[in-house]
Amino acid sequence: MDDYPLDEHDLCTVCRESLVNFDTAYSFGSYEGPLRKLIHLFKYAKVESLAGPLSRLLLQALPLDQNFDLIIAMPMHWRKRWERGFNQAELLARPVARRYGLNLSSNLRRKRYTAPQARLSELERRENLRGSFAVKRPAQIADRRILLIDDVFTTGATLRAAAATLKAAGALRVSALTLARVDRRGFHRDFALSGERHTMLSAGMGVK
Image (cartoon, rainbow, N blue to C red):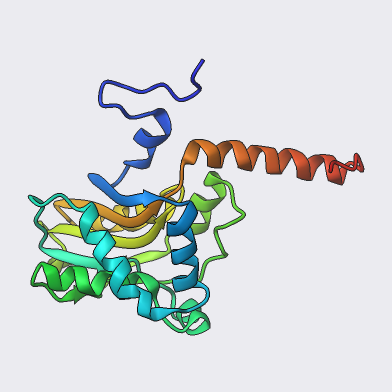
């Protein structure tokens, strides 16, 4: 039996939960294979010249009939930006904003430094992000259709936290756009196995 049955909209339980706080979500592809390698080269090996080609992939993921009033890149805390040297979401979002004839908005900010998300469970990710975003000028957010751009949709915790802040400031709609999306069904299974392995190792069972 499928652990994640689809509803009448072809969405599984995990996908429905992912859409909380924003209205639509678009991704170019799955976070695997060549696309994952390209994102790693861009983000971690700091091959910034990949921003243009990857932005063109982002644009392919958007339906032609969609319109937006503001485009916002997922903000980074100043400390994390200093550590990396650039905000990869911002580099990806600039060409998208130009495509819509808009300036990239900087109205959303990361107001506190958070621990890395990679090894956290979904609940831990939500707690880690609590109160981490703020809107600088709410009047410029109210009644606007906003496109929020990031590189990877993992569990959606970061995007949901940012979208909730924008909705609280009065945003009419918030859509998420990412290059890649992790198959969260696999994420849940892998994390559970990782936790089980950690528990066994701690108990001295020597799992290989």
